[in-house]
Length: 184
Image (cartoon, rainbow, N blue to C red; front, top):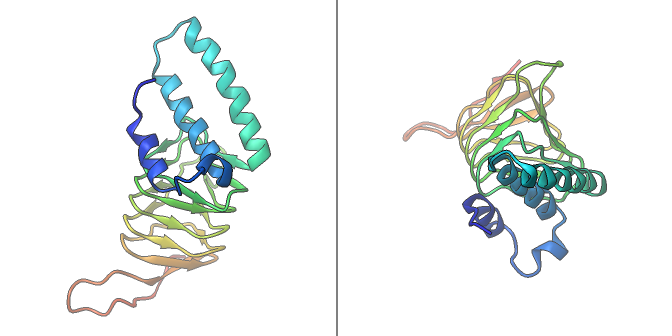
């Protein structure tokens, strides 16, 4: 088996003492990374057989653990999912490196066929946060629990509420770092 640096980065964010027994979310991430490796294979019988096993494993993990990470989504290395369950990503979503998702997170479009979010690096989403539509979450941004993000969140900012508004933004030197801006 060839090395997968993205998978290795994911594993580094988990407690390495029996992660497959303690963290159900690691199964979903493993299936996602395996699916990406299958997609990179050349066409042929081996790929078709691997796809069959992938889809069975994907559906099993999605049903049992409630985590849907379609292999068509582009997820950077170092994904960490805390508290598995009810996590759904649209197949076209882009997630940067070192991001953290918690239970109940939905990242997708606002209407069928519509644009989907792009998350920068080191973004954290609280429990039951929803990020919907053509929005960009900047590097290092945070979204509070149960927030509904419908507009861009600047790098380093914290957004909360439904609809979300920025309540804290990383400040430039010499500036206060609490700024409030409605995102509606």
